[in-house]
Picture 1: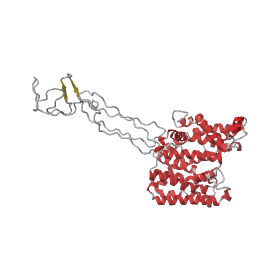
Picture 2 (picture 1 turned 180 degrees about the vertical axis):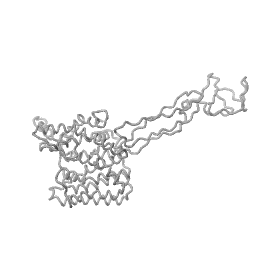
Picture 3 (picture 1 turned 60 degrees about the horizontal axis):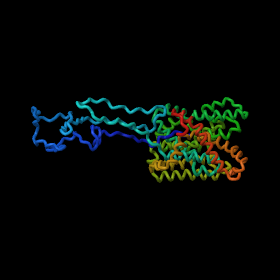
Picture 4 (picture 1 turned 120 degrees about the vertical axis):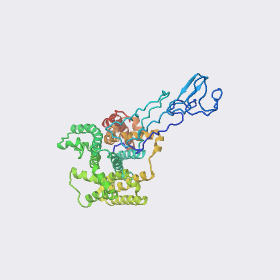
Length: 483
């Protein structure tokens, strides 16, 4: 999946102004007396006699001062006879501006650069009484809660689908197409850096959680009489479907998503270059591969053929992520976007309903062509609405608990996806043990799938606490129980 937590709040820089407000950086606090402004003649300061309204020199029992203006690089002095001291204020040049802009997609392989100190300035004659505070380090750009919320809802829908098996769930919310669309947006943003570095970073962040999860699954299948062949190499880098036995199929069959995601990551530098040559035609042609596989050539019947089907099904959604990042959708006419989206949704729905006999259901997950077109239209509307109306769900931050849940879902997205099937598998024998407790049998709805859904989420939360830290290690962060 697109686990990229995308910088969201994209493109916000934080600049520092060069000017200073009243009472800042001149050695006095607001409300205090300062000698920085020039006093008008005749000013009666602190009960003293007013100065004679005549030009310099003034007689103080000394030789008269030369009749010339003070040099501007020296501070003025205001004599305070009552307190018997002088207050000196240095007039200095303003601080040079410091560029505090932040990279909208900072490289996870590097620490953020420290703010460079301004160059030393030539000191003037008088000592500074109060030094101005150093420039503060720019804050990290806020995340886009719109995309974060979509990702969280997509994960919830995946768990619900695998619990209840609702055929209509994909039509209400095509979670896999949405997740590929979000991943495409983040990938286009990341490719502003060198492509090789981005690809390595994506693999580094995804593979350690997969390896950690795979150790338990592989060991369990070995205990249950599985004899692997050379294909076990796909448990190291899942560019093909990792092998397994029927006993562990429910756990490992979800790995098609990781395999498809890794292939999109590898192909993205080329795909993005092609897209930017002719954005709209390339976006439209990205639906051609699924049409070819459906009506012309079905591809080989092996791991390569399976990968081709999945890539073709979600290619348009991935390219939509590019279109959103480059502002292509925002520049399109609203009427055209709505018509194209509804046409794609209509065709996908029609094909799913009219081919139930072929696939045994209208479930989009069983019908690649219907899934491709339905997801294309649905994700296009979501991406276009985000770009056109500037939706960011900033209001979500006012609800602390909901905002916290969305944060955890995004920071532990890989963990939730990998472990949710195992959680649902373990929920069944756990609920069976509840029948042995008379109070549980009487007061708990042990036969309800909703009860299993709730128990499954409790186990998912446990896996997040026990295994989520692997995502922190993969991202080169300090391991935490919860982000």
